Length: 316
Image (cartoon, rainbow, N blue to C red; front, top):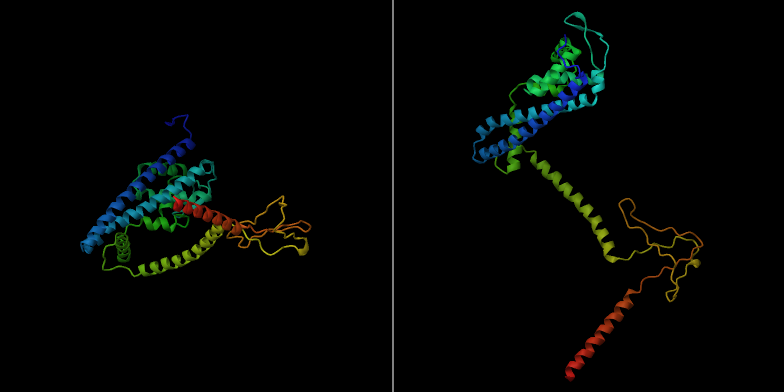
């Protein structure tokens, strides 16, 4: 007699377990990241006080937490993948004969596109101590059998699909001296504290920043051109685009206004020389605004007004 509730389907079980595992993994990732920031400040204080040996020992905790966070992020992505392809996961599959331990046994095999995610979760979950992820692992083992879980945990098995990035992050080894030195160098640079074994790669980063500044000046030149165009306020047309110049009516004294006024488009990075194409047979009046005379008249009238006021003050 089955103890499972008749209304709960395998699909519902998987969906609920995946969602709970994803939520828990994100919570742990954020918590670990926040704690790591505080620990980095403590490492900076140790370096500032000259306690480099103590910092080298304590920075190993930061390195291990960072590796764990990376592992949890991968497992979160695998859970999201299986949740998105839930129909492929729970669909009935064939039971091919897979050799294991020199014996021929029929064990269910999942869709080939899901094997990496399934085997990675089965293999890496014991290294995380996440209860919700253990629930997902138990469902997968129950779905595909214990023999398949043995294949997932046996890295020497030819059918094992666990990628190298998961294997290395589950490998329990103390971090090497180069990695410790690299971490402390980054922390020392970020908090501007001294470190006697600072890596010399920082100079290359400064050179890259200088090249970016040079490129920025080039962009600034384009921006300056655009600002100049806006400041002038007058769009200057290029040379006439029509072959017959006689049709152009260049008469500045004419009182007849053109029925249509066309201005060329503004310059862009895609079109550095914008222009207006004028079809043949269309009369064009290219008049320049007589702004100078208007300015002169306004200046003369202002000067006359001031002169009159000054004479009136003299008389009074």
